[in-house]
Image (cartoon, rainbow, N blue to C red; front, side, top):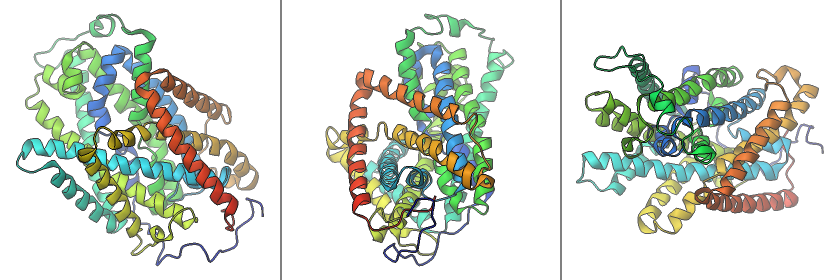
Length: 469
């Protein structure tokens, strides 16, 4: 049977009590798209990137932002044409084969679950500073229970949490940008316009040359991870096709402004050599420089919100990805059970895996937990590769069979798709050149290879019919 033929119903597929609901509204999707990528990596992690790249961090974020925009446009095209809670995993299965959907889906699930643990540890560290008498593992347990409970309930509860979390993060960045621009033009009280002093002084725009730019580029690429969640959530929205189309179109340029604009404000106002940028984070360092009262406390609250938001979104994304994989015969059937419109077993397993990662960080921080961190290092690039390869194949099929489904179109197809694939290959090569990222490439490559082999064996031995193209 060809992949373009509608499949017959197969009784061996997991049966569910009820399908996923459509409880997410357009405002939820818009905020998930805008807020999903704004995490602690932007608020704190970008400081080390600035220390390496200097003012050229603006260029690094612009280059990586262009790549992310291309990836999101491709994903938006496929998700608007065929909304699915498995998102790019479903698209990879349709375009390349079941082994590709298996590999992309379970790799992403693993990434999200480990990320849940990392975000829980970060959030607990902040709250522990306020409540030193409460052990950090207990705080992580509270966060896990909170967001596990949120995701076990109706999907609209997840949407409401993310709406307000994202609104607070976006509000904080917009306020930072406004204050920063006022300071740059010299109209903020007690400040004078810095001009180009910090952009061209201290060694110039690229003080550490191309090597510094490369380090900044690698850091910025992975800072953009998280946008994919909106296409997973779109399948549970009131109007999936229109919802994902609008969310993708509006989110891309706004996120570019948030990231590139923030970096431009920081390196224009402060010398890139300022130690506070790396130790306190660029946002706190800038607000302290401008004399904003209680800047560190304000940003700690914002960072806490960013971490909790990411935990919530990642538990959601992991559970939906697992549920989608199982519904396609790509995992243990028990994970596919849906009740009340929610894959509750998948939510519980994803949350539990995240909490195990937290325990490993306390028990074996130098070996097992570090292995987990290295393994997820380049997974987002693997996912982007599958997205680009899938779009390259599915676009031709859609134009031939269902052109009316092309609500969102990739720009200058297929040329920009090939350029995006080339960009990803360049990032892989750059990772292989750097000592700090080479080991991540090896571990991620090993995980991807293992998943691909398992997926291929399952594909060869499975009696199930491939999903409809």
